[in-house]
Structures are given as structure tokens and as C-alpha cells.
Image (cartoon, rainbow, N blue to C red; front, side):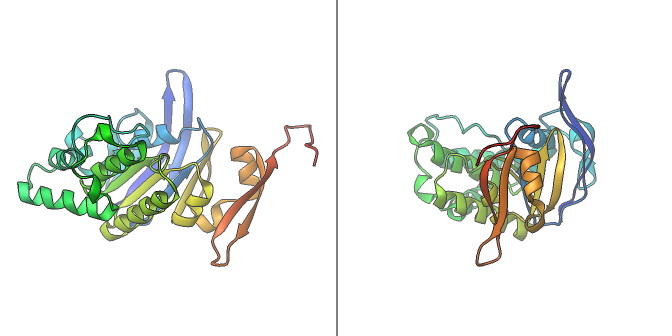
Length: 266
């Protein structure tokens, strides 16, 4: 069972404060958490801090251990991070890239066991056909799937995924969300996923953390987190929350919000 506790977390670049006083209670084990907010609000910085790649003030503890005090190898074993940037387009084939990612954090595994992990990961994601294709011969979306496979094959306690669906069409977006959610539940781990598509997050995530103005505007289950006021506060848009026939909430945006003291014409 994986526990992540964030207390009074702050992130700055030089004199510029990005996020301040972020406190979040432990998420339910097995949860898929959507990290939402406008461009530049600090979603990527937040994930990088939890991955041990950004310095931070305050505390972020994974299973009782402060993340920024973990040894590199320990972090790599327990925390899987997928950045926004796609895997480099090299002559390395996908299978080699994924197998190497597994062996890097699991030197204890016999070669046959590591191979089995890699093969199972390709099958889970539905990309077995890419296994022996060179990365420099792949589309951006295909490389993004290989990057995700490099995270999943390590079986980390927590997956930190920064816009993992950005280069994918709708079918593959849904597949990624379904697979990540299933893995988190099976392993009783956690998956934090930065997303721009609000409705995709509301449909698939168990919990949403909404950032705005350098702080947490809301942290709640997907059914409760989004309101017209929070849409205005976070995204400066006027919108409504509707529900589909299955009871899933979705956002309909009507227009940009009026600047203070002004009214937009209908």
C-alpha cells in the first residue's frame, strides 16, 4: 500500500514563487489523481518535485520517507516519472529501451524475469507491434507510448505522468487512462497525471487536484471538484457542469469570463 503525504510544499525558481503552501492529505491507495490547472500554473513543477528533480520547501513523503532525501537509486525504484518531452528518436528499438529501463532499477532480476516484465508491459499497453521498431522510425504518439512503457515496466509505487496523452488520438488516450488506472488499483499504488483535458480527467480520475494562482483551488473526488466558480478562478472562463446519462460530470464552456469591471456581450 502506497502513501503520499504533502505538507506545506513550496516550489520556487530563483526569486519567482511557483507554488506555495501546498498541503494534501494521503490519497486512497490505488487512486488515479488528475492534476489540473491552466498553463504555467506549476503542474509540471509539482510533478518534478515529487520525482525528486526540483527542489522544494516543506515536506513530501512517500511511505514515510522524505522524497528529496532519498538516494537516487531508491527514488528510481519507487517513483516512475514521465516528462512532457518525448523519448529521444534514436536507433534503439522499443524493446531494448523498455528492457533497459527495467534493468536499471531492478538489477536483482534475472534476465528472463526482466524480459517477461517487458513483454507483459507491451501487451498491457497494446503496443507489441512496436517492440522491434526503432524509436527514430516512430511517430510522436508511438514514442510517447514507449516512454510510458518505460515507467510501467519498473512497477513503481507511484507514477508521475506529465501530459501522457498529449500526442495521442482519442482511442489511445482512453487506453492509456484505462491501463494506468488498472495498474494503480492492482498494485495499490498511486498515479498522478497532469492533464489539460478537463472532461477526460473527470471521466477517468478518482481524485482531482486543481491548481490556480500558485495554490490548490480544490482537491476532491472528480464528482465534486469542478464548479462554475472554480472554472472562473482557474481558467477565466464561464462554464457549466452537466451530467451524461451515466452520471459522469462534464464541463461545457460558454465563453471567456469578463475582466473585472467589464461585461462581455452575449
